[in-house]
Image (cartoon, rainbow, N blue to C red; front, side):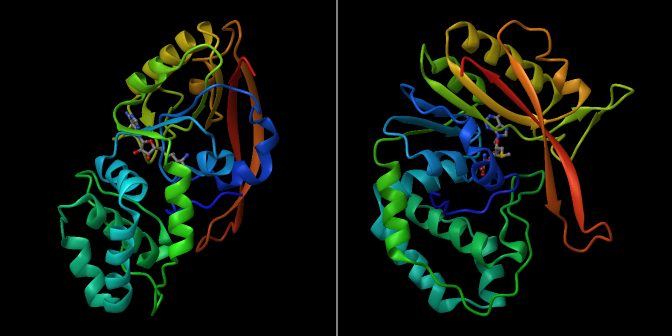
Length: 268
Ligand SMILES: C[S@@+](CC[C@H](N)C(=O)[O-])C[C@H]1O[C@@H](n2cnc3c(N)ncnc32)[C@H](O)[C@@H]1O
């Protein structure tokens, strides 16, 4: 499996480990409009890829790793040397200017924070507290490999609809939006409700329907919930499948919890 350099909330490592056989082998260009940590991109290593996300800091980070990996590494080494609880909070408050220092800050905070996961508050500010690691260590060859993987990729900060609309006949879109649902009284619920609205879910379904009609190959992961299913059910050419997943939630009595995920496919 390919190496992701960031651990991202909602990351699709589990999908790549368990469900990789669902991914197509032959396609023209690869599109990932909700990039995050890019688990599926780094698994597939496509030659020709368009990667995008709405998060500007994340896109600057990918761009710096592709174009300026030596400077990213140099900045990471500084973080490695200075690492401490106090230093972590100083870096968390900073807004670096160059793409290389934005990238190093993001990778450092991701590694040194609690549970090693990237999460922002409503204002888009990274808000995860300090983790438990006394030392952090960054490996140059891993970062150089990541840079090589990204060399031919087009990396864009934009809304998903623009990216999906770029895909043409025989391209492949892997789509992993933030998970949100409507409850039984049509109220909008979910952790991501303020970042991905119900209108966004509808826009996404419409954009994927247009792409399907252009013969684009599509694989989307989403919440298995009636409200989401209803957006794709009974539309010619979409295939829906439910898969069960066990997830370990630390700090809860339930321990292992079962989740249902919805896979929506077209032209595969
Ligand atoms: C579930 S995460 C993707 C995780 C990724 N598949 C992985 O393996 O790490 C969803 C991503 O969608 C992005 N996002 C949210 N709203 C968006 C929008 N309107 N357009 C594009 N990206 C958006 C978020 O910034 C986040 O990175």
